Image (cartoon, rainbow over all chains, first blue to last red):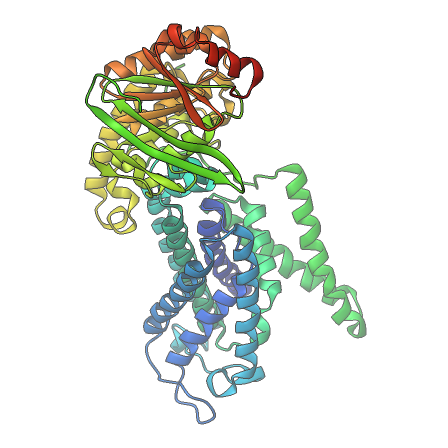
Length: 319
Length: 260
Protein backbone atom coordinates (compact mmCIF):
# COMPACT_ATOMS: atom_id res chain seq x y z
CA UNK A 1 0.00 0.00 0.00
CA UNK A 2 2.78 2.39 0.97
CA UNK A 3 4.68 1.48 -2.16
CA UNK A 4 1.61 1.90 -4.35
CA UNK A 5 0.94 5.29 -2.80
CA UNK A 6 4.49 6.30 -3.58
CA UNK A 7 4.21 4.97 -7.13
CA UNK A 8 1.06 7.03 -7.64
CA UNK A 9 2.83 10.10 -6.25
CA UNK A 10 5.82 9.51 -8.50
CA UNK A 11 3.68 8.99 -11.57
CA UNK A 12 1.63 12.12 -10.88
CA UNK A 13 4.77 14.27 -10.79
CA UNK A 14 6.04 12.55 -13.94
CA UNK A 15 2.76 13.33 -15.68
CA UNK A 16 3.02 17.02 -14.81
CA UNK A 17 6.32 16.92 -16.66
CA UNK A 18 4.55 15.12 -19.50
CA UNK A 19 2.26 18.16 -19.87
CA UNK A 20 5.31 20.46 -20.12
CA UNK A 21 6.82 18.09 -22.64
CA UNK A 22 3.66 18.14 -24.76
CA UNK A 23 3.83 21.93 -24.72
CA UNK A 24 7.45 21.87 -25.86
CA UNK A 25 6.57 19.35 -28.55
CA UNK A 26 4.17 21.82 -30.17
CA UNK A 27 6.90 24.43 -30.20
CA UNK A 28 9.98 22.40 -31.02
CA UNK A 29 8.79 19.03 -32.30
CA UNK A 30 6.20 20.37 -34.71
CA UNK A 31 7.32 23.90 -35.43
CA UNK A 32 11.06 23.95 -34.76
CA UNK A 33 10.91 26.79 -32.23
CA UNK A 34 13.85 26.67 -29.86
CA UNK A 35 12.41 27.60 -26.46
CA UNK A 36 15.07 27.45 -23.75
CA UNK A 37 12.87 29.16 -21.20
CA UNK A 38 10.43 26.36 -20.42
CA UNK A 39 10.88 26.87 -16.67
CA UNK A 40 9.72 30.49 -16.96
CA UNK A 41 6.38 29.52 -18.52
CA UNK A 42 5.88 26.68 -16.04
CA UNK A 43 6.71 28.95 -13.10
CA UNK A 44 4.42 31.69 -14.35
CA UNK A 45 1.53 29.24 -14.48
CA UNK A 46 2.29 27.96 -10.98
CA UNK A 47 2.49 31.43 -9.45
CA UNK A 48 -0.57 32.82 -11.23
CA UNK A 49 -2.71 29.88 -10.20
CA UNK A 50 -1.34 29.95 -6.64
CA UNK A 51 -1.97 33.68 -6.27
CA UNK A 52 -5.59 33.29 -7.33
CA UNK A 53 -6.48 30.20 -5.32
CA UNK A 54 -4.61 30.47 -2.00
CA UNK A 55 -6.48 31.77 1.03
CA UNK A 56 -5.97 35.40 1.95
CA UNK A 57 -2.45 35.96 3.27
CA UNK A 58 -1.42 38.96 5.34
CA UNK A 59 2.15 39.27 4.09
CA UNK A 60 1.42 39.48 0.37
CA UNK A 61 -1.06 40.68 -2.20
CA UNK A 62 -3.24 37.98 -3.67
CA UNK A 63 -4.78 35.00 -2.02
CA UNK A 64 -8.22 35.30 -3.49
CA UNK A 65 -9.36 31.83 -2.52
CA UNK A 66 -10.79 31.17 -6.00
CA UNK A 67 -11.56 27.63 -7.20
CA UNK A 68 -8.69 25.54 -8.54
CA UNK A 69 -10.22 25.42 -12.04
CA UNK A 70 -10.14 29.22 -12.22
CA UNK A 71 -6.47 29.15 -11.30
CA UNK A 72 -5.69 26.64 -14.03
CA UNK A 73 -7.53 28.59 -16.70
CA UNK A 74 -5.85 31.83 -15.62
CA UNK A 75 -2.46 30.08 -15.67
CA UNK A 76 -3.05 28.97 -19.26
CA UNK A 77 -4.12 32.46 -20.24
CA UNK A 78 -1.02 33.98 -18.62
CA UNK A 79 1.32 31.48 -20.30
CA UNK A 80 -0.37 32.03 -23.63
CA UNK A 81 -0.19 35.81 -23.36
CA UNK A 82 3.47 35.75 -22.32
CA UNK A 83 4.29 33.45 -25.25
CA UNK A 84 2.27 35.63 -27.58
CA UNK A 85 4.22 38.72 -26.48
CA UNK A 86 7.58 36.97 -26.81
CA UNK A 87 6.49 35.56 -30.16
CA UNK A 88 5.37 38.90 -31.54
CA UNK A 89 8.70 40.43 -30.54
CA UNK A 90 11.05 37.72 -31.77
CA UNK A 91 9.43 35.39 -34.28
CA UNK A 92 10.00 37.74 -37.19
CA UNK A 93 13.72 37.56 -36.53
CA UNK A 94 16.23 34.78 -36.94
CA UNK A 95 15.55 31.72 -34.84
CA UNK A 96 18.50 32.15 -32.48
CA UNK A 97 16.94 35.35 -31.12
CA UNK A 98 14.06 33.29 -29.79
CA UNK A 99 16.47 31.10 -27.84
CA UNK A 100 18.25 34.08 -26.30
CA UNK A 101 15.00 35.85 -25.49
CA UNK A 102 13.29 32.86 -23.90
CA UNK A 103 16.34 32.09 -21.80
CA UNK A 104 16.47 35.69 -20.61
CA UNK A 105 12.76 35.81 -19.83
CA UNK A 106 12.90 32.59 -17.82
CA UNK A 107 15.83 33.88 -15.76
CA UNK A 108 14.11 37.23 -15.26
CA UNK A 109 10.85 35.60 -14.18
CA UNK A 110 12.70 33.38 -11.74
CA UNK A 111 14.28 36.47 -10.20
CA UNK A 112 10.84 38.07 -9.95
CA UNK A 113 9.52 34.97 -8.17
CA UNK A 114 12.45 35.22 -5.78
CA UNK A 115 12.37 38.94 -5.08
CA UNK A 116 8.84 40.29 -5.56
CA UNK A 117 7.95 39.31 -2.02
CA UNK A 118 4.62 41.11 -1.86
CA UNK A 119 3.41 39.10 -4.87
CA UNK A 120 5.23 35.80 -4.64
CA UNK A 121 6.30 35.33 -1.04
CA UNK A 122 9.96 35.74 -2.05
CA UNK A 123 12.46 33.00 -1.36
CA UNK A 124 10.03 31.13 0.89
CA UNK A 125 7.54 30.82 -1.93
CA UNK A 126 3.84 30.22 -1.43
CA UNK A 127 2.24 27.59 0.75
CA UNK A 128 -1.36 26.47 1.37
CA UNK A 129 -2.05 26.13 -2.35
CA UNK A 130 -5.32 24.20 -2.34
CA UNK A 131 -4.83 20.60 -3.35
CA UNK A 132 -7.47 18.79 -5.41
CA UNK A 133 -9.46 16.31 -3.32
CA UNK A 134 -7.96 17.82 -0.16
CA UNK A 135 -10.67 16.03 1.86
CA UNK A 136 -8.86 12.75 1.23
CA UNK A 137 -5.50 14.02 2.44
CA UNK A 138 -5.61 11.81 5.52
CA UNK A 139 -5.59 8.62 3.43
CA UNK A 140 -2.43 8.94 1.38
CA UNK A 141 -3.24 6.03 -0.95
CA UNK A 142 -6.70 7.26 -1.94
CA UNK A 143 -5.47 10.84 -2.14
CA UNK A 144 -2.57 9.98 -4.43
CA UNK A 145 -4.72 7.77 -6.61
CA UNK A 146 -7.43 10.37 -7.28
CA UNK A 147 -4.77 12.99 -7.97
CA UNK A 148 -3.05 10.61 -10.33
CA UNK A 149 -6.36 10.08 -12.10
CA UNK A 150 -6.94 13.83 -12.35
CA UNK A 151 -3.45 14.53 -13.70
CA UNK A 152 -3.72 11.65 -16.13
CA UNK A 153 -7.02 13.13 -17.32
CA UNK A 154 -5.31 16.49 -17.92
CA UNK A 155 -2.52 14.76 -19.87
CA UNK A 156 -5.09 12.84 -21.90
CA UNK A 157 -7.05 16.01 -22.60
CA UNK A 158 -3.96 17.93 -23.76
CA UNK A 159 -2.79 14.92 -25.78
CA UNK A 160 -6.11 14.55 -27.59
CA UNK A 161 -6.35 18.28 -28.27
CA UNK A 162 -2.85 18.33 -29.75
CA UNK A 163 -3.35 15.17 -31.81
CA UNK A 164 -6.53 16.70 -33.17
CA UNK A 165 -4.76 19.94 -34.09
CA UNK A 166 -1.47 18.55 -35.32
CA UNK A 167 -3.14 16.13 -37.70
CA UNK A 168 -5.32 18.86 -39.13
CA UNK A 169 -4.30 21.12 -42.01
CA UNK A 170 -3.04 23.57 -39.38
CA UNK A 171 -0.53 21.01 -38.13
CA UNK A 172 0.49 20.22 -41.68
CA UNK A 173 1.14 23.88 -42.36
CA UNK A 174 3.23 24.07 -39.17
CA UNK A 175 5.37 21.19 -40.33
CA UNK A 176 5.72 22.71 -43.77
CA UNK A 177 7.09 25.88 -42.17
CA UNK A 178 9.40 23.80 -40.00
CA UNK A 179 10.71 21.84 -42.99
CA UNK A 180 11.26 24.78 -45.34
CA UNK A 181 10.01 28.21 -44.52
CA UNK A 182 10.78 29.74 -47.91
CA UNK A 183 8.97 26.99 -49.79
CA UNK A 184 6.03 27.15 -47.39
CA UNK A 185 5.79 30.88 -47.97
CA UNK A 186 5.92 30.44 -51.73
CA UNK A 187 2.98 28.04 -51.35
CA UNK A 188 0.88 30.58 -49.48
CA UNK A 189 1.63 29.87 -45.80
CA UNK A 190 2.21 32.73 -43.38
CA UNK A 191 5.19 31.51 -41.33
CA UNK A 192 5.12 34.26 -38.72
CA UNK A 193 1.45 33.77 -37.93
CA UNK A 194 1.78 29.99 -37.71
CA UNK A 195 4.81 30.18 -35.46
CA UNK A 196 3.20 32.69 -33.12
CA UNK A 197 0.13 30.48 -32.82
CA UNK A 198 2.20 27.39 -32.06
CA UNK A 199 4.37 29.25 -29.59
CA UNK A 200 1.39 30.67 -27.70
CA UNK A 201 -0.34 27.28 -27.59
CA UNK A 202 2.82 25.64 -26.25
CA UNK A 203 3.31 28.40 -23.67
CA UNK A 204 -0.26 28.00 -22.41
CA UNK A 205 0.22 24.24 -22.02
CA UNK A 206 3.48 24.69 -20.11
CA UNK A 207 1.82 27.15 -17.74
CA UNK A 208 -1.01 24.68 -17.19
CA UNK A 209 1.61 22.08 -16.26
CA UNK A 210 3.05 24.47 -13.70
CA UNK A 211 -0.36 25.08 -12.17
CA UNK A 212 -1.24 21.37 -12.01
CA UNK A 213 2.09 20.58 -10.36
CA UNK A 214 1.80 23.44 -7.86
CA UNK A 215 -1.65 22.33 -6.73
CA UNK A 216 -0.62 18.72 -6.37
CA UNK A 217 2.41 19.51 -4.21
CA UNK A 218 0.69 22.31 -2.32
CA UNK A 219 3.56 24.77 -2.15
CA UNK A 220 5.95 26.43 -4.58
CA UNK A 221 9.29 28.15 -4.26
CA UNK A 222 11.42 30.06 -6.79
CA UNK A 223 14.09 27.33 -6.67
CA UNK A 224 11.72 24.98 -8.51
CA UNK A 225 11.94 27.01 -11.70
CA UNK A 226 15.65 27.14 -12.42
CA UNK A 227 17.10 26.46 -15.90
CA UNK A 228 17.57 22.87 -14.70
CA UNK A 229 13.86 22.33 -15.24
CA UNK A 230 14.16 23.48 -18.85
CA UNK A 231 17.02 21.04 -19.34
CA UNK A 232 14.96 18.20 -17.89
CA UNK A 233 11.99 18.88 -20.15
CA UNK A 234 14.24 19.05 -23.21
CA UNK A 235 15.90 15.77 -22.23
CA UNK A 236 12.45 14.21 -21.87
CA UNK A 237 11.33 15.30 -25.32
CA UNK A 238 14.53 14.26 -27.06
CA UNK A 239 14.59 10.86 -25.35
CA UNK A 240 10.89 10.20 -25.95
CA UNK A 241 10.82 11.36 -29.54
CA UNK A 242 10.56 14.93 -30.71
CA UNK A 243 7.52 15.43 -32.92
CA UNK A 244 5.60 12.53 -31.37
CA UNK A 245 3.08 13.31 -28.62
CA UNK A 246 3.18 9.80 -27.22
CA UNK A 247 6.96 10.04 -27.25
CA UNK A 248 6.73 13.25 -25.23
CA UNK A 249 4.67 11.51 -22.52
CA UNK A 250 6.87 8.40 -22.54
CA UNK A 251 10.06 10.47 -22.37
CA UNK A 252 8.72 12.45 -19.41
CA UNK A 253 7.91 9.33 -17.40
CA UNK A 254 11.18 7.63 -18.33
CA UNK A 255 13.50 10.52 -17.63
CA UNK A 256 11.65 11.37 -14.43
CA UNK A 257 12.02 7.73 -13.32
CA UNK A 258 15.74 7.84 -13.92
CA UNK A 259 15.98 11.19 -12.18
CA UNK A 260 14.03 10.02 -9.12
CA UNK A 261 15.72 6.61 -8.88
CA UNK A 262 19.21 8.04 -9.25
CA UNK A 263 18.35 10.61 -6.58
CA UNK A 264 17.25 7.85 -4.23
CA UNK A 265 20.32 5.78 -5.02
CA UNK A 266 22.63 8.71 -4.35
CA UNK A 267 21.10 9.31 -0.93
CA UNK A 268 21.60 5.61 -0.14
CA UNK A 269 25.16 5.31 -1.37
CA UNK A 270 26.83 8.55 -0.32
CA UNK A 271 27.35 9.75 3.25
CA UNK A 272 25.27 12.74 4.28
CA UNK A 273 28.19 15.14 4.08
CA UNK A 274 28.79 14.33 0.41
CA UNK A 275 25.20 14.23 -0.78
CA UNK A 276 24.88 17.82 -1.92
CA UNK A 277 27.82 17.33 -4.24
CA UNK A 278 26.80 13.84 -5.30
CA UNK A 279 23.44 15.21 -6.41
CA UNK A 280 25.21 16.58 -9.48
CA UNK A 281 25.55 12.96 -10.58
CA UNK A 282 21.83 13.04 -11.40
CA UNK A 283 22.55 15.65 -14.05
CA UNK A 284 25.48 13.58 -15.31
CA UNK A 285 23.26 10.51 -15.62
CA UNK A 286 20.61 12.42 -17.61
CA UNK A 287 23.35 13.94 -19.76
CA UNK A 288 24.86 10.55 -20.54
CA UNK A 289 21.42 9.19 -21.34
CA UNK A 290 20.86 12.08 -23.72
CA UNK A 291 24.17 11.37 -25.47
CA UNK A 292 23.34 7.68 -25.84
CA UNK A 293 19.93 8.47 -27.34
CA UNK A 294 21.37 11.05 -29.71
CA UNK A 295 24.01 8.61 -30.92
CA UNK A 296 21.91 5.50 -31.03
CA UNK A 297 18.46 6.78 -31.91
CA UNK A 298 18.52 10.50 -32.68
CA UNK A 299 14.84 10.58 -33.55
CA UNK A 300 13.99 9.41 -30.01
CA UNK A 301 12.34 6.23 -28.76
CA UNK A 302 9.10 6.97 -30.61
CA UNK A 303 9.95 8.87 -33.80
CA UNK A 304 7.63 11.29 -35.52
CA UNK A 305 4.81 9.56 -37.37
CA UNK A 306 4.16 10.67 -40.93
CA UNK A 307 0.49 11.24 -41.45
CA UNK A 308 -1.27 13.00 -44.23
CA UNK A 309 -4.45 13.97 -42.53
CA UNK A 310 -6.57 12.53 -39.78
CA UNK A 311 -9.54 13.22 -42.00
CA UNK A 312 -8.48 10.62 -44.52
CA UNK A 313 -8.02 7.64 -42.22
CA UNK A 314 -5.34 5.01 -42.61
CA UNK A 315 -4.89 3.57 -46.04
CA UNK A 316 -3.27 0.30 -46.91
CA UNK A 317 -1.78 0.14 -50.34
CA UNK A 318 -0.76 -3.26 -51.60
CA UNK A 319 2.29 -2.38 -53.55
CA UNK B 1 8.83 46.59 -74.52
CA UNK B 2 7.86 43.06 -75.35
CA UNK B 3 4.35 41.98 -76.07
CA UNK B 4 2.48 38.86 -76.98
CA UNK B 5 -0.51 38.55 -79.26
CA UNK B 6 -2.71 37.43 -76.36
CA UNK B 7 -4.33 39.50 -73.63
CA UNK B 8 -1.68 39.87 -70.92
CA UNK B 9 -2.01 38.14 -67.55
CA UNK B 10 1.31 39.18 -66.02
CA UNK B 11 2.87 42.57 -66.66
CA UNK B 12 6.16 43.91 -65.39
CA UNK B 13 6.97 47.58 -65.97
CA UNK B 14 10.47 49.01 -65.67
CA UNK B 15 11.68 46.63 -62.97
CA UNK B 16 14.95 47.73 -61.41
CA UNK B 17 17.08 46.17 -58.71
CA UNK B 18 20.56 47.07 -57.50
CA UNK B 19 22.84 45.27 -55.11
CA UNK B 20 25.19 47.89 -53.74
CA UNK B 21 26.34 49.78 -56.81
CA UNK B 22 25.59 46.92 -59.18
CA UNK B 23 22.40 47.10 -61.25
CA UNK B 24 21.43 43.44 -61.54
CA UNK B 25 18.13 44.26 -63.24
CA UNK B 26 18.01 47.53 -65.12
CA UNK B 27 14.66 48.79 -66.33
CA UNK B 28 13.14 45.59 -67.68
CA UNK B 29 9.55 45.38 -68.86
CA UNK B 30 7.67 42.35 -70.10
CA UNK B 31 4.19 41.03 -70.56
CA UNK B 32 3.10 37.43 -70.44
CA UNK B 33 0.06 36.40 -72.43
CA UNK B 34 -2.72 34.55 -70.63
CA UNK B 35 -1.90 31.25 -72.35
CA UNK B 36 1.69 31.85 -73.31
CA UNK B 37 4.97 30.09 -72.52
CA UNK B 38 7.59 32.82 -72.43
CA UNK B 39 11.28 32.02 -72.10
CA UNK B 40 13.95 34.20 -70.53
CA UNK B 41 17.50 33.31 -71.53
CA UNK B 42 20.88 34.92 -71.27
CA UNK B 43 24.45 34.24 -70.18
CA UNK B 44 25.43 33.78 -66.55
CA UNK B 45 25.22 37.04 -64.64
CA UNK B 46 22.69 38.55 -67.03
CA UNK B 47 20.20 39.11 -64.20
CA UNK B 48 17.74 36.30 -65.00
CA UNK B 49 17.61 34.98 -61.46
CA UNK B 50 17.20 38.45 -60.01
CA UNK B 51 14.33 39.11 -62.41
CA UNK B 52 12.77 35.83 -61.38
CA UNK B 53 13.12 36.64 -57.69
CA UNK B 54 11.59 40.06 -58.20
CA UNK B 55 8.58 38.53 -59.94
CA UNK B 56 8.23 35.87 -57.24
CA UNK B 57 8.54 38.38 -54.41
CA UNK B 58 11.61 36.72 -52.93
CA UNK B 59 13.47 40.05 -53.00
CA UNK B 60 12.00 43.57 -52.89
CA UNK B 61 11.84 45.83 -55.94
CA UNK B 62 13.79 49.07 -56.08
CA UNK B 63 11.49 50.50 -58.73
CA UNK B 64 8.88 49.32 -61.19
CA UNK B 65 5.51 47.65 -61.06
CA UNK B 66 4.30 44.05 -61.21
CA UNK B 67 0.67 43.37 -62.04
CA UNK B 68 -1.28 40.11 -62.25
CA UNK B 69 -4.48 40.50 -64.26
CA UNK B 70 -4.81 44.11 -63.11
CA UNK B 71 -3.93 43.45 -59.45
CA UNK B 72 -0.83 45.28 -58.25
CA UNK B 73 1.59 42.78 -56.68
CA UNK B 74 4.69 45.01 -56.76
CA UNK B 75 5.22 44.83 -53.02
CA UNK B 76 3.15 41.78 -52.14
CA UNK B 77 4.74 39.09 -49.98
CA UNK B 78 5.37 35.68 -51.59
CA UNK B 79 2.40 34.10 -49.78
CA UNK B 80 0.13 36.84 -51.13
CA UNK B 81 1.37 36.30 -54.69
CA UNK B 82 0.51 32.62 -54.75
CA UNK B 83 -2.92 33.37 -53.25
CA UNK B 84 -3.44 35.84 -56.09
CA UNK B 85 -2.53 33.15 -58.60
CA UNK B 86 1.18 33.72 -59.23
CA UNK B 87 3.06 30.53 -58.41
CA UNK B 88 6.73 29.60 -58.62
CA UNK B 89 9.06 26.62 -58.46
CA UNK B 90 12.62 26.55 -57.16
CA UNK B 91 15.68 25.83 -59.26
CA UNK B 92 17.03 23.67 -56.46
CA UNK B 93 13.86 21.91 -55.28
CA UNK B 94 12.76 22.59 -51.72
CA UNK B 95 10.58 19.62 -50.73
CA UNK B 96 9.20 19.30 -47.19
CA UNK B 97 11.64 16.44 -46.65
CA UNK B 98 10.13 14.73 -43.63
CA UNK B 99 6.57 14.93 -44.95
CA UNK B 100 5.10 12.41 -47.37
CA UNK B 101 4.81 13.19 -51.07
CA UNK B 102 1.03 13.40 -50.76
CA UNK B 103 1.33 15.62 -47.70
CA UNK B 104 3.67 17.91 -49.62
CA UNK B 105 1.06 18.40 -52.30
CA UNK B 106 -1.91 18.71 -49.96
CA UNK B 107 -0.09 21.31 -47.88
CA UNK B 108 -0.06 23.63 -50.86
CA UNK B 109 -3.84 23.81 -51.41
CA UNK B 110 -5.06 27.36 -51.01
CA UNK B 111 -7.95 28.51 -48.85
CA UNK B 112 -7.86 25.56 -46.46
CA UNK B 113 -10.34 26.14 -43.63
CA UNK B 114 -8.45 23.79 -41.38
CA UNK B 115 -5.30 25.85 -41.60
CA UNK B 116 -6.86 28.39 -39.27
CA UNK B 117 -6.65 27.41 -35.64
CA UNK B 118 -10.26 27.94 -34.64
CA UNK B 119 -11.98 26.12 -37.52
CA UNK B 120 -9.42 23.30 -37.16
CA UNK B 121 -10.59 22.97 -33.58
CA UNK B 122 -14.34 23.46 -33.74
CA UNK B 123 -15.48 22.64 -37.27
CA UNK B 124 -13.97 19.20 -37.97
CA UNK B 125 -16.76 18.17 -40.29
CA UNK B 126 -16.32 21.07 -42.70
CA UNK B 127 -12.56 20.69 -42.56
CA UNK B 128 -12.85 16.98 -43.29
CA UNK B 129 -15.06 17.62 -46.28
CA UNK B 130 -12.51 19.99 -47.78
CA UNK B 131 -9.64 17.64 -46.92
CA UNK B 132 -11.25 14.79 -48.83
CA UNK B 133 -11.78 16.98 -51.86
CA UNK B 134 -8.19 18.21 -51.67
CA UNK B 135 -6.88 14.65 -51.35
CA UNK B 136 -8.71 13.65 -54.52
CA UNK B 137 -7.21 16.57 -56.39
CA UNK B 138 -3.72 16.03 -54.93
CA UNK B 139 -3.81 12.41 -56.13
CA UNK B 140 -4.90 13.51 -59.60
CA UNK B 141 -1.98 15.90 -59.72
CA UNK B 142 0.45 13.23 -58.48
CA UNK B 143 -0.87 11.00 -61.21
CA UNK B 144 -0.29 13.81 -63.70
CA UNK B 145 3.40 14.06 -62.72
CA UNK B 146 3.78 10.27 -62.40
CA UNK B 147 4.57 10.27 -58.68
CA UNK B 148 1.48 8.39 -57.49
CA UNK B 149 3.42 5.28 -56.56
CA UNK B 150 5.49 7.34 -54.10
CA UNK B 151 2.66 9.17 -52.34
CA UNK B 152 3.28 7.47 -48.98
CA UNK B 153 7.04 8.00 -49.06
CA UNK B 154 8.79 10.89 -47.35
CA UNK B 155 9.88 13.46 -49.91
CA UNK B 156 13.48 12.92 -48.80
CA UNK B 157 13.66 9.65 -50.78
CA UNK B 158 12.89 11.30 -54.14
CA UNK B 159 15.58 11.59 -56.81
CA UNK B 160 16.62 14.96 -58.17
CA UNK B 161 14.29 14.70 -61.17
CA UNK B 162 11.39 13.49 -59.05
CA UNK B 163 11.87 16.47 -56.78
CA UNK B 164 11.48 18.72 -59.82
CA UNK B 165 8.20 16.96 -60.58
CA UNK B 166 7.08 17.38 -56.96
CA UNK B 167 7.81 21.10 -57.30
CA UNK B 168 5.45 21.16 -60.30
CA UNK B 169 2.81 19.15 -58.43
CA UNK B 170 2.89 21.45 -55.42
CA UNK B 171 2.56 24.62 -57.42
CA UNK B 172 -0.27 23.10 -59.49
CA UNK B 173 -2.16 22.23 -56.31
CA UNK B 174 -2.27 25.95 -55.53
CA UNK B 175 -4.27 26.48 -58.76
CA UNK B 176 -2.19 29.34 -60.12
CA UNK B 177 -2.95 31.29 -63.30
CA UNK B 178 0.76 31.93 -63.91
CA UNK B 179 3.68 29.68 -63.01
CA UNK B 180 7.23 30.97 -62.87
CA UNK B 181 9.62 28.09 -63.57
CA UNK B 182 13.22 28.51 -62.41
CA UNK B 183 15.45 26.29 -64.56
CA UNK B 184 13.27 23.18 -64.52
CA UNK B 185 15.84 21.34 -66.68
CA UNK B 186 18.84 21.99 -64.44
CA UNK B 187 20.33 18.75 -63.17
CA UNK B 188 17.73 16.53 -64.81
CA UNK B 189 18.63 13.47 -66.86
CA UNK B 190 17.57 13.44 -70.56
CA UNK B 191 14.78 10.87 -70.14
CA UNK B 192 13.13 12.86 -67.39
CA UNK B 193 13.70 16.08 -69.31
CA UNK B 194 11.32 14.86 -72.03
CA UNK B 195 8.75 14.11 -69.38
CA UNK B 196 9.13 17.55 -67.75
CA UNK B 197 8.81 19.30 -71.12
CA UNK B 198 5.73 17.25 -71.86
CA UNK B 199 4.19 18.13 -68.49
CA UNK B 200 4.88 21.85 -68.97
CA UNK B 201 3.07 21.73 -72.31
CA UNK B 202 0.17 19.93 -70.65
CA UNK B 203 0.06 22.50 -67.84
CA UNK B 204 -0.02 25.26 -70.39
CA UNK B 205 -2.88 23.54 -72.20
CA UNK B 206 -4.85 23.70 -68.95
CA UNK B 207 -4.84 27.45 -69.44
CA UNK B 208 -1.92 28.33 -67.17
CA UNK B 209 0.62 30.83 -68.45
CA UNK B 210 4.29 29.93 -67.93
CA UNK B 211 7.35 32.09 -67.61
CA UNK B 212 10.46 29.99 -67.93
CA UNK B 213 14.01 30.88 -67.01
CA UNK B 214 16.28 28.32 -68.54
CA UNK B 215 19.80 27.61 -69.79
CA UNK B 216 18.85 24.54 -71.76
CA UNK B 217 18.32 25.80 -75.32
CA UNK B 218 16.72 22.58 -76.46
CA UNK B 219 14.04 23.02 -73.85
CA UNK B 220 13.55 26.67 -74.78
CA UNK B 221 13.26 25.78 -78.47
CA UNK B 222 10.69 23.09 -77.80
CA UNK B 223 8.56 25.08 -75.37
CA UNK B 224 8.73 28.77 -76.13
CA UNK B 225 7.36 30.50 -79.24
CA UNK B 226 8.89 33.69 -77.85
CA UNK B 227 11.96 34.40 -75.74
CA UNK B 228 13.57 37.42 -74.15
CA UNK B 229 17.37 37.53 -74.17
CA UNK B 230 18.84 39.27 -71.14
CA UNK B 231 22.32 40.71 -70.89
CA UNK B 232 23.81 42.95 -68.21
CA UNK B 233 20.46 43.44 -66.50
CA UNK B 234 18.67 44.58 -69.65
CA UNK B 235 16.49 43.00 -72.31
CA UNK B 236 18.78 42.72 -75.32
CA UNK B 237 16.54 40.97 -77.81
CA UNK B 238 13.18 39.39 -78.17
CA UNK B 239 11.55 37.04 -80.65
CA UNK B 240 11.33 33.42 -81.72
CA UNK B 241 14.20 31.32 -80.29
CA UNK B 242 15.42 30.32 -83.78
CA UNK B 243 15.66 33.97 -84.81
CA UNK B 244 17.17 35.62 -81.74
CA UNK B 245 19.93 33.03 -81.49
CA UNK B 246 21.08 34.03 -84.97
CA UNK B 247 21.46 37.70 -84.08
CA UNK B 248 25.03 38.95 -83.91
CA UNK B 249 24.59 40.88 -80.65
CA UNK B 250 23.08 37.82 -78.95
CA UNK B 251 25.90 35.60 -80.15
CA UNK B 252 28.33 38.21 -78.88
CA UNK B 253 27.00 38.26 -75.33
CA UNK B 254 26.97 34.50 -75.18
CA UNK B 255 30.54 34.38 -76.41
CA UNK B 256 31.86 37.19 -74.27
CA UNK B 257 29.45 37.21 -71.36
CA UNK B 258 29.22 40.99 -71.81
CA UNK B 259 27.26 43.15 -74.23
CA UNK B 260 29.14 44.90 -76.97
